[in-house]
Image (cartoon, rainbow, N blue to C red; front, side, top):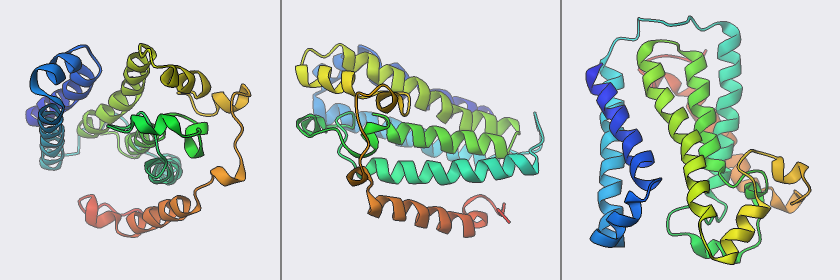
Length: 225
């Protein structure tokens, strides 16, 4: 359990303690853009790998709550929403993504009209679904880390981008919203049929189907049936 705890803390510190603070600019200036991204990626994927390993090694018997049938059903719905959101979010050109600021020249489209952080919301739904469907301490540590990272990561990114002096960033931040559907409800944007990426939607459903049927192979023998 100690290895899992340390890995979760390092994973959070790497993202929230570096990329979301002035330390990011200091490291970028001292190391250079490429070296910084290399070190950052190594820490991120390395700590994630240790998290997965640590989660697989500990027993999942100390329950803080016992999941119910209703919780499993809710988790399945959240997983579907999560995967569709992640896939469709990955296919839209988002200026908040790494080295994608050129997307500011494009009109806001697709899921960005719903939220400027679709992938982060997808990860948040994914983690919340798994928290509901489990309840043991290891799962709370593992998936709770992604809940914290996704939510506070969005806040951190927004805080950093609001300090941008580029009028393109200012316009993007004013037009879009972090909380889903707020920009649409407020009338700042309108969601049109052309904003639906049908390839991404179908791919998201297909991915959900694959993971649903093969869940016991990727989750240590725990079947969804």
